[in-house]
Length: 368
Image (cartoon, rainbow, N blue to C red; front, top):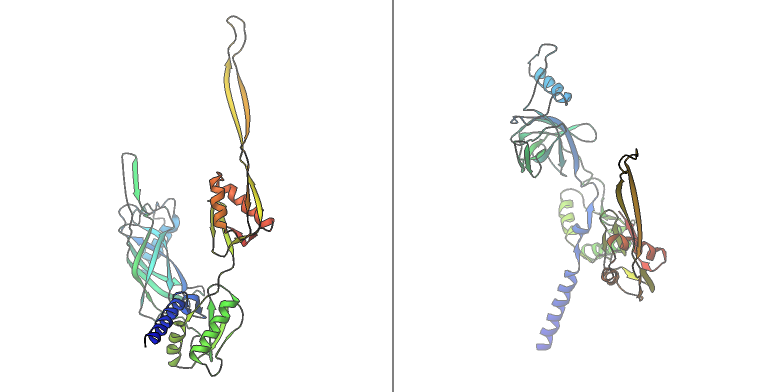
């Protein structure tokens, strides 16, 4: 009996360890056609406390205000010059989530496009939000929430956070639904977030083993797309829910080193390894100093005062250290060794590129 309990406990621990290293399909892939859609609109924010656009420098704000007033039946005499201080022209952006229906609300972001000092305390007037096809999918309106604060007095100014961008939670109402192809056809398509042939095959095998052991319903079309035969009607939602919660052990990512040439940052994954190589590093410093002097003529010599520059150039080469890196050493050990000899981030970028050219760096080197 004790032996049986030990084997059961061992099986439970093994299953737990396998599940701990596995990922859900919903974390590895998305369903083709289930996506967000970007919306964009142009509108006016009113009610600002003198921090709006300067109308002499942003004539489009005045034109928009005149057009809005005309639509409301207010006609201004020709040649009227408006001096607005409480109005700002803004762009309104939002993301329309999949399966959104008319009447639902979404969050919107309001950003100034003029020279308004602050949008704090403003109210966005009714603004149509359009998609890439030019159709109106939502209408936005509401009071802005700006997290920043600012004050100015006596020529001094202080600002906390950002004052020219605000958000309106649930500030837009969906007016039009975006049709999706989820319920069409006899199959759904899963798209991996990161293309990998091994992961695609494992995902298809898991679906066939867990859902349909008798016959295959899933097949990997390439390194990113998996076709899955799915039932029609309302049963498709339950089927997708079961599929996306299956556990799949993703393959290890391809060895890659990401180098940011602007900041000197180096990021690598755990599969990066090295071949035998030797690295020598030495700093070369060139210092140029100038000593500016003035030559003053003797009294009554009828000479002129002249300036002279004496330049001194100094070249200093630090002692270079030679590092022997054995095969299989992780890149992290190399970075630590280079740090110990005083290599700067820019030096590391040059060394990594040289190691890649020499064939010693077994990884893809990507410079961003």
